[in-house]
Image (cartoon, rainbow, N blue to C red; front, side, top):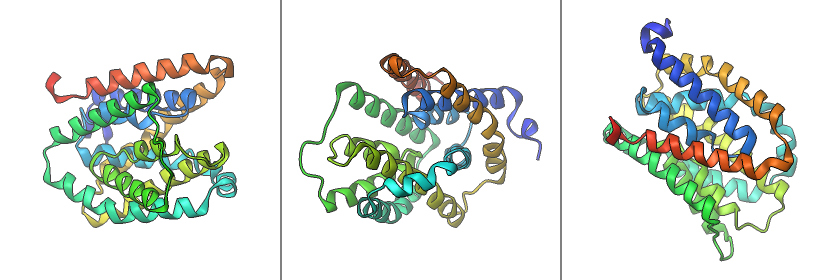
Length: 248
C-alpha cells in the first residue's frame, strides 16, 4: 500500500512530526504522549484511524519493560482496572460510531486540557482508594479509550492519590496502558473499524516514535525535570488547542 498516495506527503509529515514530538515529550516528562499526538492526528485522520495508529506504535516500544513491571505491580489493583476497562470499552467504541468526527476532536482536546489543568493545579483525590473506585476508574478509562483513545487520565489522576509505592504505581500504570492497547485492537476488529491502511501507517510511525524516545533519553537530565515538565505542558496545551475544530 502506498501511504503517500493514501494520505499525502504533507499529512504524513505532520503525523510523523506528531509521533516524534509525542515520544520526545513522553521520554522527557514521563507522561503526555497521547495528549500530544491525538489532537494533531485527529486533524488529518478519521477518529478510528487516529486511535489505530497510536495503538500500533505504542505497542512496540514498551515490550522490553514488561518483565520488570510484572514484578513490581499490584495484581489486585491491575485486575480491577482491567475488569472495568473490558466492560466499558465497547460502550466507548459504540459511542464513537454514533458521533461526528468533530465531536471526537473536541473530546480529545478537552480531555487533554482537563488532564493538563489537573496536573498543573496538583489535583488529588483525597479519600480512600477502595476496590469499587478502582474498578470504576478502569471503566472510565475503558470508555475514554473507546471514545477518544485516551485511557490514561483517569488512572493517572487516581494514582496521584495512591498509597502504593512509586514502583508499584509506575508498574500498574505502565501495564494497564499496555493492556488497553492489546484489548483495543480485537475490539476494533469486532466493530469492523480496524483499517488496514491505518495499521500500516502505525507501523511506519514506529520509526519517528523510536527516534523521539531515543532523543528524549539522551538529552534527559534529572536536575532539569521541572523544566522538561513545563515544556511538556506547553506542548500538550498547544497540541490540544490546535486540535479544536473551531480553527478549521
